[in-house]
Image (cartoon, rainbow, N blue to C red; front, side, top):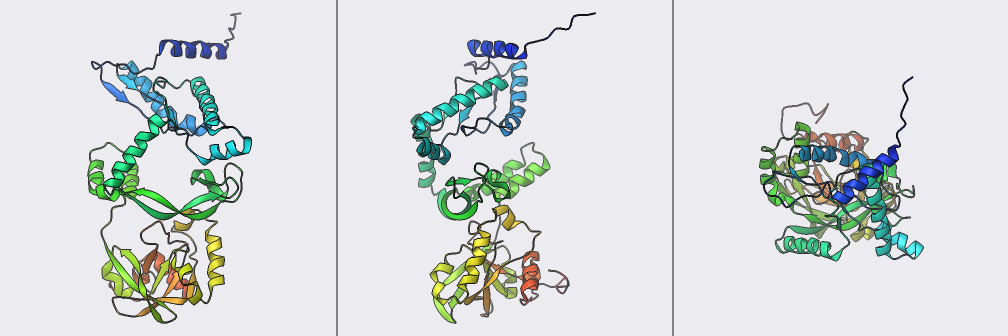
Length: 379
């Protein structure tokens, strides 16, 4: 019988990984005679738990492409780094008494070992650590330049907050309303955050999509992310207890021609006028109970179109439709977000599916402005 050879795969892997390190096999060269290829993955956050399967999945695609380009004679720059800022490290440091710098260095060392064991062909001479001053001073410099140019602004939005870990979580890290770290219930919390004014470049970004070889569904995602729209702002006079408050609810609409059909307004549960006029609101307890329920929902859960419409009418506050002078009710509902637009919308149930469903449920008037359908059946 033919002898079956048993290979020590770990020894083989270690041999070649050691060779790659010693010979700097994947280092980008200072050689301008070769065609260049630059590949960049999203830098991982080096947690104490180490890598997970998501890192392997996310990096494998560009790993394959980078290796192929090297075989084709390209000078490949494929760097790696660690986006090491974050409250988890701070909380861990407080809990254990170990300095955050030391915690971060330990986590980066662990990730580096794991990434090399997987066999990723990163250029280890160009490692980035976002907590090093030599790196983040340029982040601050870029931010200041954008701020000075009016391309940065501050606004309120909802974030996924874990009261136990005391950190803000991404949607991916809080699926099912639970914290991935400690499995506590997350809450939606209002927070002032910085935004980049990408709308200033919306036209250029959309034009650029015509020149790239993206799949149609990817292009559509990009178009939705850019979010270019044309419309107008309108002010609805705010009334409290039947008296003019002297201020307005400002809304943005892409269809100002339907304003004669506005029969109610909806504001986000987190809208500041609720606290400002709490003394004039007669059903504050009902609003608070509803707001508490909303705080348990993710942004995705709140904004999905196919769901039962919920809300509470504010007893004590109304608005005046500027198109016809009629006083209309104001509701709070979870499908309106403070981070989108102004945190308030005008509702035209005759010509918007979501407003139509809401009006049907709460028995609100539906006034047709533009003919062409049967509003007894649908918007």
